[in-house]
Image 1 (cartoon, helix red, strand yellow):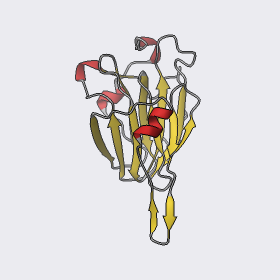
Image 2 (cartoon, helix red, strand yellow; image 1 turned 180 degrees about the horizontal axis):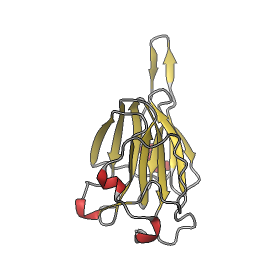
Image 3 (tube, one colour; image 1 turned 180 degrees about the vertical axis):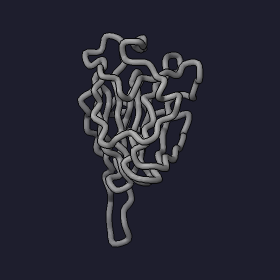
Image 4 (cartoon, one colour; image 1 turned 30 degrees about the vertical axis):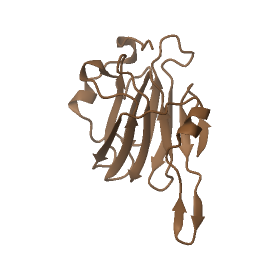
Length: 182
């Protein structure tokens, strides 16, 4: 695996180190030794999947507060997304800053989302399927969200937003949430 640090502390783009031949390729999606060598989480307690049907649909920006703060490892299995993370950590030099990368079935990349970050994505194609590994179990009372269109974040979504859940439309702005203390 190839770990490329993103501009936000603790966040990585992870690309496969493929072994190829005429049949195709083989690659690891996770290796405890390699993740540990980069100081990353090596324990996953929940694995989820999502399907987003329409291009332009947006999900997020979601986060979990302690004691359920979680690390996420996200991979696109079908289609393509623009994946965004936002640093919400108390005292972070990059608080309120975001980073975005394209994840697709074609590029097979993953994003490592540290604790204390919000996460969201926009579907760039129809029928996008994602795989999420979580370091902690989902906890409704500890869930939070930040508005995808908050001017303080100024996220440059690649497409007009065509679908957004009422829950995501009702998220707070960055100035209305309490930063995450880990």
